[in-house]
Length: 183
Length: 183
DNA sequence: TTTCCCATGTAAAATGTTACATGATTTA
DNA sequence: TAAATCATGTAACATTTTACATGGGAAA
Image (cartoon, rainbow over all chains, first blue to last red; front, top):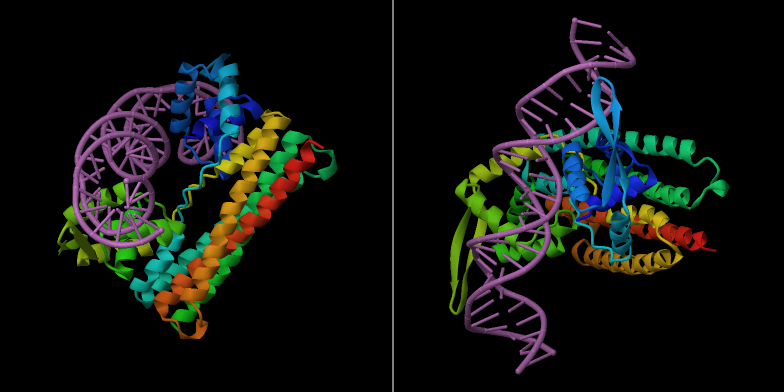
């Protein structure tokens, strides 16, 4: 019950088409709320029915028309009410943790394969951290001159950076532990 | 597609009833894979049909019979195959991050309410960290004498501890940022 | 005597994923 | 000339959540 809210926030930051939203969910917003384009189109349609968002058709000669979405007053009210409601506890889903505990029931060969997987997984998180740090230098070069929206975006990005650093440290711990088992 | 696997791991660690599994998902396994009892009963039934798990009925005079589940050979094979398959990227869902970015579109009163919420949220994470640390002292007192399963459980718990510490630090950053906006 | 714990489920609704579908434009 | 990008969707399926349902035993 919050993809709606993530979309509302994203559209308030910057109106745009379903396609553009999908790309933001891949890049920026998707750092803390994932969604596919099908889901986004579906939810946008429902929000339109409910009067939360409105679209402006933009013809583009040749390629399909683009519908640029903006937040309408009822949508803003819904968002404000949600912002002031209690934060729900997160539903954690960490597949790798399950696999690590599962490794107790596999043999040394399986654990060797898991080490390779963890190394690959670690590399993807290193990439993610690099992208975050690059984005931080690009979007928040001078901490003193930021407006409210930018400061809030920055503190969320700092959360992402802290998360990735924590994950990398933990994965080193995991690798050392796995390597220590079969020696 | 992994509640099955979390259940298989949990049952290999210790056979038990659906009810017991649900409690483990609230306490231990639920740290990295949440599930309600309804979902667990439902998935157990499907896994039974597929021959992945088998139940032993335990009559208990008075209260309803308990069905104690164990992993059957096909279930073990499924788990082994899954353990050796690539780790899927996590689907991140961080409601608080959405709210923080949304706070740019609320007024000072709304942001004051958010600060209160973040403080409450921070307290729950402090409790979680305390529980993890207590559990660590209880279950892993002497790092030298642990078997494979315990070492793997311990490294996963260390991940939980690292995560909670990171969250607490970040929430301090969030609170300082929010407080800095309306001054 | 009320609340929590044990113990298992059904059913409906909401949410999310995967596969399929189309077709022009731009880039390599 | 092949692949990626822009642009929007439908349909089927799977997963997850929420509400409802039952009932005895133990503890406060």
